[in-house]
Length: 159
Image (cartoon, rainbow, N blue to C red; front, top):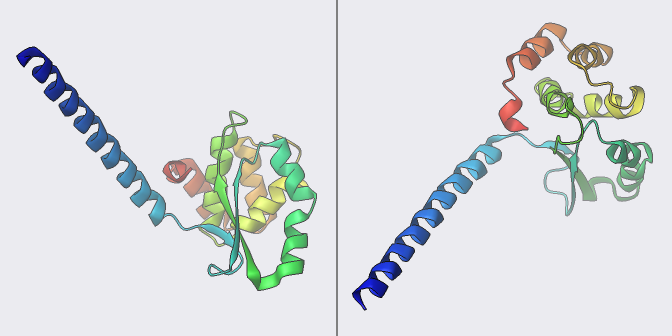
């Protein structure tokens, strides 16, 4: 009986330890994510919010964008709808750096211009470091600021 009770206490201790360990990690992640500015297009208080988890290297994401569905919804619903883009960089080896580049553009209030340029004006998977920097120049960003941001990797935790 004492052995059974010992295993029960040990099991409970392990369970509690795992629970608290996971809870601490999740709250830290939630706090970090809460500090990130959203890549939002439309009013923050819009009653309809569409959240896209996307990847600049994703053919389906490019297809969704280029089909113009988002623009049609904005035209139809105006200020009643907002779009938020969250990075999910998993398709190509260059996807994480492309997501970082998007966040560097966001620092200059140009996330959506950069987003649109990548999907509309570039070849699929043209996401090398030099290409990402050239896209910033093409949309008129402060090149030195963008390059410093991208080269530093400071946006990596955000994506």
